[in-house]
Amino acid sequence: MTDLLAKTADFVDIESVSFAEAPFVDWLERDLKTLPHLEVTRIGDNLVARTSWGFPQRLVLAGHTDTVPVNDNGTARIDGDTLYGVGSADMKGGLAVFHEIAHLVRPESDHEPTVDLSFVFYAREEVALEHSGLSELIEAHPDLLAGDCVILGEPTDGHVEAGCQGTMRVRVHFLGKRAHTARPWMGSNAIHRAAPLLAALADHKPREPVIDGCHFIESIQAVRLEGGHAGNVVPDSAVVTIHHRYAPDQTDAEAEAAFLKWIGANIDPDRGDTIEVIDRAPCCPPSLDHPLLAALAAAGRQKSAKLGWTDVARFAQLGIPATNFGPGDPTVAHTQNEHLHRNSIERTYAALIELVTTPVA
Ligand SMILES: [Zn+2]
Image (tube, rainbow, N blue to C red; front, side, top):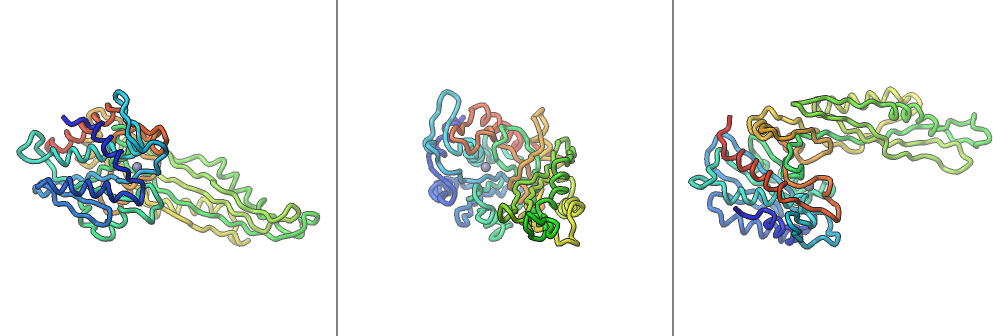
């Protein structure tokens, strides 16, 4: 069997910081094009390789090729059963697993497939969403992403981290009236007017729905407070920026409406207070009732809710159930000490090989 840790080390050594993935993608493209059972399409620096064996189910294995900037950790180093280097966990370990499956799983081999496979390697995930290579693919060729479900190889240490929470950010503007602080009754202090909302934020008890056995925990947090002009002026404006993460037991529209209503109860539009939505990203339900994802979550494997946001939500928007499942400890991602243990990648690989070679229930 291929040494997957060594394969990941080779991938780490081909530097692929966001916007500079091309050499790595060139290598992947050349390599995958040597496999006659794959049809390989390149769009920009994104690569899709698909089988066409004619099985009723198609599993999409997806992952980003970029890493965060190198921080004295651009060269792979293996120490015992641990690989150190940028991207080792996030997520070249996952890509190495997919690459191995792309090579080994084919009819009349030791790894007879039971599903069709699509491998999606996309660029620029570690930067602002507007640059996303996945968006480029969705716009140019959504048909290439078609499938029955998606496994996104982000680091979860071989556990199923199902779905993801949606997120939205708003700026709440409070209006007041300027005055001299010697005569505050002549004005209206906008910072003071924000107090009921701040108190409600501090007291807020998050919802914790359990969906498909996964415990989600929502959050509503003030992340920025602005206001004030000078040390002797009653301020006429204050702005509270709030970040909300919501669970996927509701639609994005329902979550947004409920959140805006909650804020609305703590502001006074009649006095000019307004709510401005500054960004949002959709949620993704765990979908562990899908036969392939159910099989992945079975076998005593640990499953939990993904509380952060990942690209699984992009696939959910295309109507494809998706989950996070990959090698590597997510808490070391983006750190200088980023590393990957052999056990983590071998467990993940074994689970995926079993999934794609076992008849679908
Ligand atoms: Zn990642």
